[in-house]
Amino acid sequence: MSKYIVEKFKDIEAYTPGEQPKLGEFIKLNTNESPFAPPLESSENLLEKVGNLNIYNDTNCVALTKEFAKYHDVQPENVIFGNGSDEILAFCFLAFCDLDHGIVYPEITYGFYKSLTGLYSVQAEKIPLNEDFTITISDYYNKNKTVLIANPNAPTGITLSPDDIEKIVQANPNNVVIIDEAYMGFGGESAVHLTKEYENLVITGTFSKSRNLAGARLGYAIANKQLISDLNNIRCSYNPYNVNSTTQYLGLLSIQNDEYYKKCTGEIANVREKFVDELDSLGFATLPSKANFIFTKHESLTGEQVYTKLREHKILVRYFSDEKTKNHVRISIGTAEQMNSIITALKKILEV
Ligand SMILES: *Cc1c(COP(=O)(O)O)cnc(C)c1O
Image 1: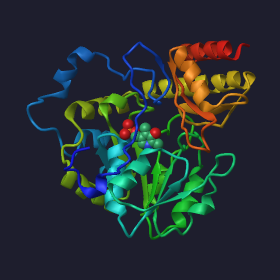
Image 2: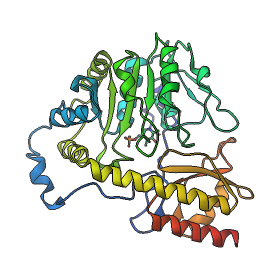
Image 3: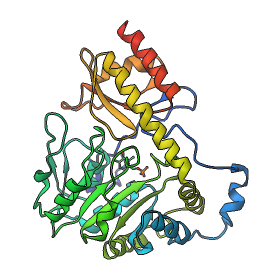
Image 4: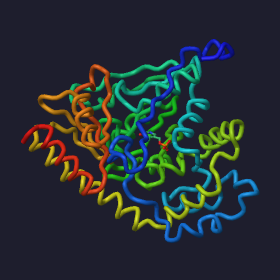
């Protein structure tokens, strides 16, 4: 730390991303990326298709927005794009939270929310999950704070239904409810359609997980046009050229290749179900996941032990050392072949 850092950031707790080792060194099942490539028919011509990089990118992502809005059956003015949905979440914090108007989210959830509360000095109320890691929706009624819920939740993978979301939205007419659908597309049911009916609902999402584009950094929010206009004002005060031209092109390509997208996400969901069955037979108890990862615990090993032993077998997974999660590991769902490798490694570790 330098002596120049401002007082309020001296103790900031930055988000710790999952390890990104050299390609090929490990089987990487630690950061919920897709194991599949984006739909690039001919990546050699990519730069030609993107157009002139010497001129600024389209600040409003017009072509992408039009196609994406059509895909979700909303209007272009209901959509905003960001440099990953992490940036969109930051815009939401800036627009809808401050010192007086705090935020509420589940105690166990995506770790980046906490980093944002530190960065933007927002008071957070953290609501414990039930013993079985489920959310009781009435805990989020009448909060007088911005409500933020990841659906499916991370790292549990447990999902709320659109009916549940609607009840939370109805019970908070004076607050914004943000539903982070980063892991939608692997079996959960999106609540995007509710944004047409409710003026206080923001759905955020990303191309990082289900659309195989983590490295391109593309996230979005869908909401009624006043909320999107607020978010755009924040965006243009912060970084008006936040989504680069290459990423806008890749996003468009992804939407246009819907069959490929469905093939990839469908494959992940199938591999997940088979993997969970196999874990079962090895003495693991796994939470019911509708995401591209599972959260599981072994009857005789801690999360850290599973992590360490798998690492020796050149497989990376993630564990969280907090009291309530320390017995679990989170394992991303990769290809069928990768999941066979992890089962083989686990059999050796458990000597079965
Ligand atoms: C991965 C993730 C995000 C952020 O994804 P980006 O890559 O920034 O688009 C947001 N929310 C949750 C719950 C995530 O797991």
